[in-house]
Length: 505
Image (cartoon, rainbow, N blue to C red):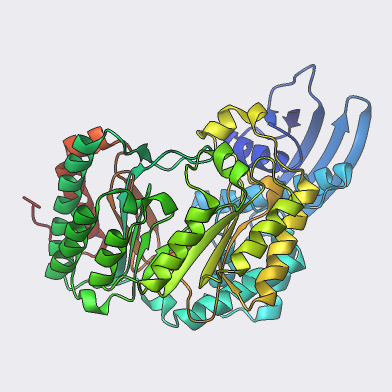
């Protein structure tokens, strides 16, 4: 789909307009230069005044005029030109979405939002003490979000504040993400830094040496400056891909290096691939008092698991769940994915029925996203997925099932190119929510990323401004430079918390 845009000349409009168009059409290209063979042409006129912007738009196809729209927005307070432009961009997006909805008859329940974290908007309203009814009205009018999604956001925000009452006061603490970049195999939909572990023991040994160094030096810095840790999350890859002995040494390093480990609110270890779970590894988790893990079926259809590159069986998922439960794992999360290749309502219903036999403490329901670098995206013709209508019905099934079984939504995030323009929702039984998931989604405190491919998100304790810093994704580059990356992180943290820095060496 080629769309010609007239009346705008700022390149910063192109990406948001493409993202919105992709909600309606496959692989849209936006151009500001007149193209003879464009499918649609949209003419915008902007009247920007000191306190407001007025947008009019007219939509044409090859036959002529189709739709028009107008929208006026008063500027809310802003500090920078970038913040002001964002409000102009949203006003243009408002008129643009309205025209595309009228033309196609497709209603986007998330309105103009294409970002990852919609609940942050609701948190912002609450921090500004905006009354709930007024906040809902503002979100509806400004972003065109439908009432059912606003209610979902409200429910999640209330749940988060019940679980972490001091959520808005945790900027002087940090959480820590530890990335282990190895898996038994790489799933077709995955873009995480994950490398097949077979035959890579040399890389694993070198990587773990660098990771231990990072943990020691970051822990030393935290101790020196009396900064406590709220949560720790071992992700990846699959952290249980390494040996039980390597896991034991890693958790010992955590207890030795990090400050006040006994006061950390939550430690989670992803054990997402059932084929990595052994009795020996569960004994190590138990030894270090870690009882929150993930065991991720994704689907209970064996043919689907084979198609997406997961080399475990459905029976193995069930067996490892029971093994973990028998060995004291009291808070088990499971991930399911809506819209996997070849799956429709019947297959997803079967997966929910199988989940009911296990009743994990929490359940994250993902909607398949065609991530740009994944095997699935590169070879789309091989992977037939359900249409928008069926995807939406599967999401409704998940909502009904979780409600019927006393699971409550507690975090939400969205991804670009997500099927049906839907969302990923974390549900849990009361009191079993993942605090880390809340912290990473709502961006109320710094998350320090350690290990391969781990991204640090540093939140200024005073202003809330976010600075990102990523470790390299491949083990070789990480192994060659981990000291440099550790030093850079410590300098950034010292600047952020306004303390004197010392060399990590």
